[in-house]
Length: 200
Image 1 (cartoon, rainbow, N blue to C red):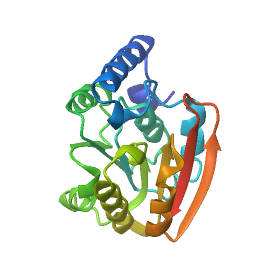
Image 2: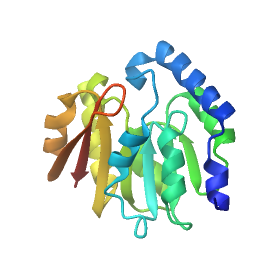
Image 3: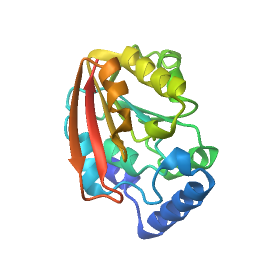
């Protein structure tokens, strides 16, 4: 295990802390999380399958939660790459500041709708990939389309939005905002998840 892997590996005690924090926040904000259990390794693998790790230098994650997907992105991504994680939940922001000390992680307490300004503040012109598990289906329509269009505009021409959802409700919105939308399914998750790969 290299230095970066040691920094991002979850110990049994930290895994218990993650699950407890995730469950507490699910009951406080069920519409924000969508599931009481963090993403399975099978879902994470399927979601990140399209990423060209050698090429990617700017990756954005919406709603990192307790860092289940963030850890895997940090484990795989290039030493010179940056992960900008945007989170609205203060409990998760506080947790991640100490749980993921990787210097390549830039944690932002804010909204995905502001992704362009967040990247610009960091001197970054575009994202190679945006990874998201935020529950689009429970968002107000205006916010959902605002996030999807802002994300499209923040992606590089060869960039891609990678999302997972527990409902197919978002598909028409994805097809309106993106030129190419590929769809998959991961049954080995609780609950089973739809995955979408969207090119601007």
